[in-house]
Image (cartoon, rainbow, N blue to C red; front, side):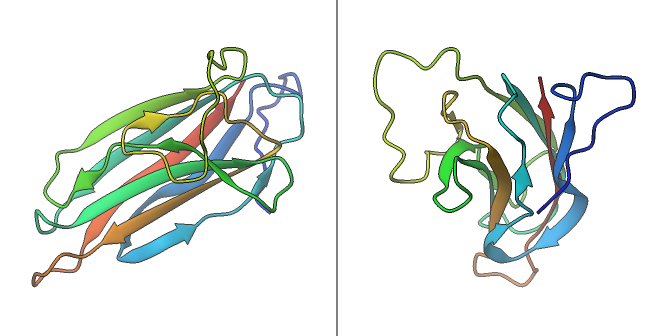
Length: 154
């Protein structure tokens, strides 16, 4: 399991920076799952940032970045599916917030992966992981995207 990094001098229950994926160039991979982080049960909210700094491949190549949560480290639910990035997409940073205090008025079907650009804000759990899929379209270049995925626990 991954470790949660707590800045010195902060409350042990809040203020952690969780690096789900460090900034790096990544190539083709289907459903690549990162480290699992045991976050305990004291967090109230997570702010998650997904900076994509480079996508220099073919237009048909794609990058999908996800954040999943679990209450038991066995069954995982997709909480965030960032906007799909094309192989020729411009650098951008997206932000998502998971906050179970605003669950909404209807149930959320978590059977399938969320549509691109979707946040299921009330999906929460003791465990968190990042994952991604990079698809290579027919072309000469190998798909490559440079990105990171960082969560901040409040």
